[in-house]
Length: 70
Image (cartoon, rainbow, N blue to C red):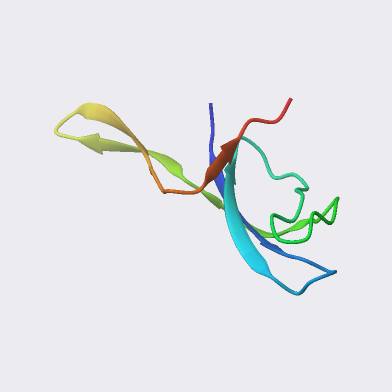
């Protein structure tokens, strides 16, 4: 499953935060609980790399809130 680091900016309280999601989707502000805050940016946290003929799959492990879409 793909993971993305989504950056958000709250339209109500002007706070910024990041969360890991399995997709690029709206979130709820952790500071004021405003709903439907759209991501400003999404960064793919996974990549495949070929080293010495072997395919390696890398995934970032950041200390952010991880949420699965569904």
